[in-house]
Length: 460
Image 1 (tube, rainbow, N blue to C red):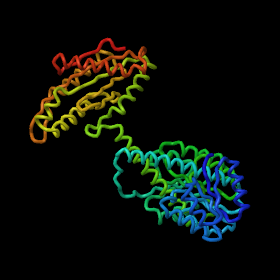
Image 2: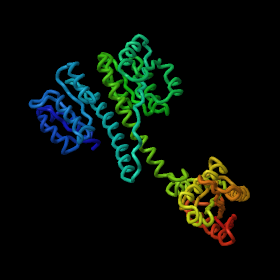
Image 3: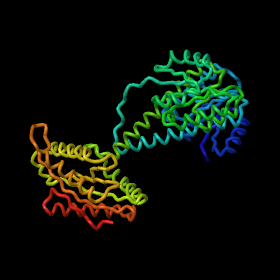
């Protein structure tokens, strides 16, 4: 099944008809006849979405929605409300209570299913981000520091400047931030040069639905707007346009007859969801950085370096270009810690990492893979240039002692083992053996007196 939906309606026939419609779209369903049953089932069964009738015999549906949204167990479950009376005030109260949308009976099946698909798609993406966020927290990565909420940016795309002006007047007083109005012809170029907006409100035209949908598709695919929430304003009766907009990637639909308050509520709701997604993405990026980076030196760690070396090897094989691997080790590093203390040892490692970065190309990989051991990979390089690079690294470490905060100077030297790989003949499966070859060359440099470069000449 593509999702589990709780149907809440006091009329059994309505529940059965809805169950058949949803089953034909491969949804699993649960049923409740009262608000009390809905509250219990929502907690016990954790449905992916709740289809909630506003008129229930025991508790008003809007009150049920309010309780679900205030319960930590159920507050993230999206709710779509259904009403037999077309009451705009009722719709506003439902949106205020936290409902994703409100449908009037009788509703169009195509439109309802498109809306459910869009909501469930967004919920699945948020759930996946949340799971990854929890995993990073369980691995011990720090929660990102809380900061002030930045002002929201809303972009209105509408060729009708008078209508756009009314929208701007309605939003500007309630949105802390900026409201930018663009025409469809100018939108893509203008937005490419700006930071990602929080919400884009796109006025679609039924008589030019193809142009509206192409613009929506571009907004969804471009780097500058792919993470923005997009609300599409659709004219009455444009069911095909509305359902296709949802399937292409619209986050919400707004009817052209919607009141200013409804438009504001929907935009504010999308801002909240966008910021939650932004926080989760930022947390994941921070977690990924922590997972792949050595916290002391800022270099990549072993977890990142070895898979990346495999990718370099695969590219070398495809292009026929040689590459080099170096294993580098600070000489007698234990004596640094014993003589000056571990803080001094940390200062040495930080400075050595900085000198490595300053003397390598942007395409080169440098990682800390042990206490005082480093890995350097040089793509697209011959043996003479690789040896010259190794000698340069050795020299920049030796020629200047590391200064400590107390005024002492710590002399440091470096031993390097170098192994070459012929790209055309090298396979990804040989990566581990190549590193071992460089490691054996390092041992040779150590045994020959340290502070030198040793080459393993028989590497693949």
